[in-house]
Image 1: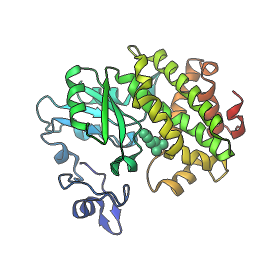
Image 2 (image 1 turned 90 degrees about the horizontal axis):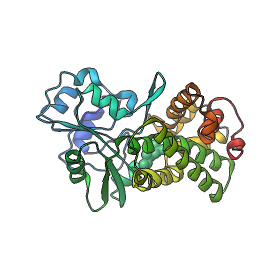
Image 3 (image 1 turned 180 degrees about the horizontal axis):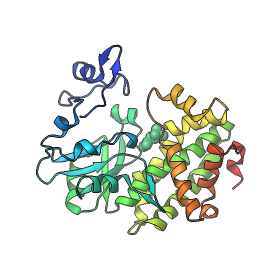
Image 4 (image 1 turned 120 degrees about the horizontal axis):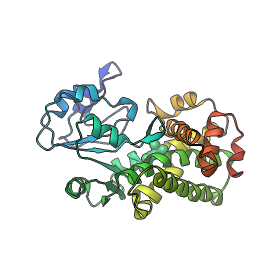
Length: 303
Ligand code: 13P
């Protein structure tokens, strides 16, 4: 496991992980099995790999180093990164960036209702592999599936990945509702509208989106868990209560982790503005206005 090196209490984080089998900074109190070895050198971490799992916040992806890595034969990639990027006129999938940066490598995605500390505590949950080739889908399902982490699969990389990325934006809306003290009915309405806008966005920009994707763990289930228990929700609740700027809240609540929903909300708005589509996505547009244009959080229910 490649780990970005940092100092914790004057020691290398990788040394602490290898001694205690615990990531004391980002996943405190959860024990890794002994076969997980933290390595600060990306080249040695991936040497000989036949399966590469990308799970850094996407701001930290390091392709320059990987270009010359000595990988094993027929190496495949999977992305667990719930983000998105935009280039001139359109959304760009992180899995697409990985694929292109890794010489066209077969790249799948794994997304689902998987709040990290609950997964690490072995609480039952489900997840979804989105694959491009049947062989890769079968390999990744076999690798990850176990009695407490049930993995389904569907041939829809873009649909699965967009569900994972866009639910972070909807979660901001859910957090605004919590900050304002609104009840379950209101949050359920935000979730429903959010799922519809997610499906519409996916179908507008990508081909081959499957209807079934939205009923898999990556769709409805991830949206629900994130809108009740996620970090984006928690930070948006604090924002609606006036507890500071996004930077202040991220620093005080996330212990060095990065919020994805705010970046994704900006990126989504860039493309909607560019295509003059804001009116067709009233929830995404309103969440952006509240988060970045000073609009009153109460306007979340004036769609
Ligand atoms: P947060 O990043 O909002 O914690 O979302 C967690 C998640 O992706 C659950 O599947």
